[in-house]
Amino acid sequence: MKRTFFLFAIAITLFFPVFVGAQGLKSAGGNLAAVTKNTGLSGDLEGTAATVITTALSLVGTIFLGLTIYAGIRWMTAQGAEEKVTKAKNTMEAAIIGMVITLLAYAITSFVTNRLTGNISTGDEKCTAKGGVCGTAASCTNGTTATGDCSGGANNVCCIPNK
Image (cartoon, rainbow, N blue to C red; front, side, top):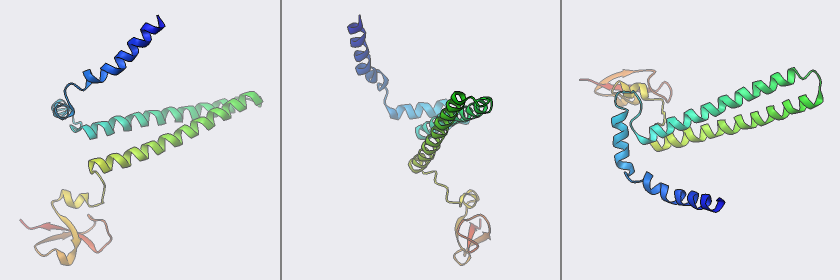
């Protein structure tokens, strides 16, 4: 019986990717865009994957925060019993280590997905949204300048072309 189950598990593991990869990723991205059209969600595969990973890491971080609070309550209600205090300390230590690992995973994931999708914040988004380009005031010859919309200090202004 064990051998039959083992062979079945190996067969499923080997042949399951064939069934999953039947359509290909290019058409999957198009289908994803069609499905998310009216939902306000991202239609690109990278954005969706980033959202799923971010949500999962947020949930894991919340669980570790709950464990930390639970360990603190157990510690406060231990009433000096060394065994209960030790268990609470161990739980709190594990929860804090888990939170640190989760925060590092979140930071790495955010960095990598921003690099892959090109969503790197430069601080010039306000200017770009207005149709302008950041630069010095002297470089803006055929437009109006706006301050405070560009990064790089007071010398950097947003040059919005005249229409």
